[in-house]
Image (spheres, rainbow, N blue to C red):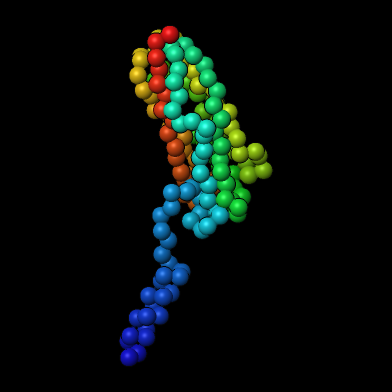
Length: 135
């Protein structure tokens, strides 16, 4: 009987204190302590040589009060400015990215990666697909 009680208490304590589920959010796994990357569109049509601006936002949980580093990975034939941004906890969560397709960019789909890493906790990422068409 003591063994059964000890086993039940151990399982209960591990369930309360020790195990954390993975989260699709960045930051902490507790409710309200994470964040997501949001954009109005994650697919963008561009002509060769075009320049477009998109807004990317951090949707912070009610209790998420950390700086977040955004690192943009850009494929060949495209440029993104800025491509390395620190969004301070006190800043507005919106960042404007200027995307430029080279005038001689090969036609097709390109993937721009956005990785957001908080000061502490887990990073999260999103992907923007750019379709380059002929001018």
